[in-house]
Length: 283
Image 1 (tube, rainbow, N blue to C red):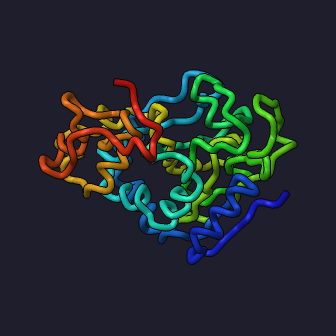
Image 2: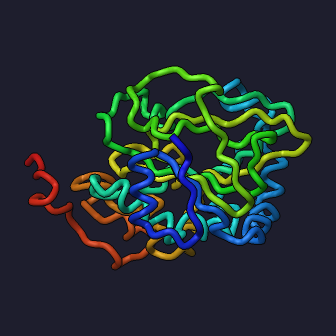
Image 3: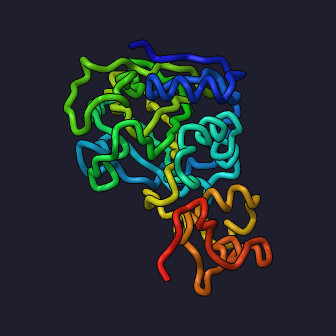
């Protein structure tokens, strides 16, 4: 099965359909290359201070720099990009809401070996989610050109429909090659892995992912982003970070307060969700 590719003007419905059938798609040049250059400049001090990974999965020649909302003024543009949010709205529509799962700059250095092929949703303690029930909608933005030689992410289009806990090799995959400013969009059920970097340059990508709000976030946004920084964001981004109820009775503060009240007094509502819509609650 081929990797779907779209222009920047792709409609959210079309992108969501491709994700449903293939589990992945590339949108070419969704943002200008200069946007990615700005992010690279903003994050350079943090990237240079990030140690290499401690194991084969995270990469012995790979760095993973997180906390991007607190460290880059430009990253919120990627997190809130309307094309991506439109697709996530549809892919994760079966849940009451979804939230920001992680923000991470992944820099694969020369000589890095290929990452084991995996599903991102295995992070949830390898829980066997029902086939077809997606819990993540993920993005990997090309900060540099992604080529097969420099470690473009390897994907298995259509593997979102496969059985869980299967094992694959690089021969089962195709490289998600794309120019700077493009984005690979994929679901949590897609089998994929970082490619081997056989070039002399570092391959950099910004990994921003979203998950249904009844699951824990991989990156703790409340500790990664100081509250005084979070208070400067637009309300939509604050809620996406997790300053919102995740479902009927998930995530409220003290006396049933809406979490957004912590950042914006008066912006939320006291109480829980809609029992008619969300199944009721114990008394």
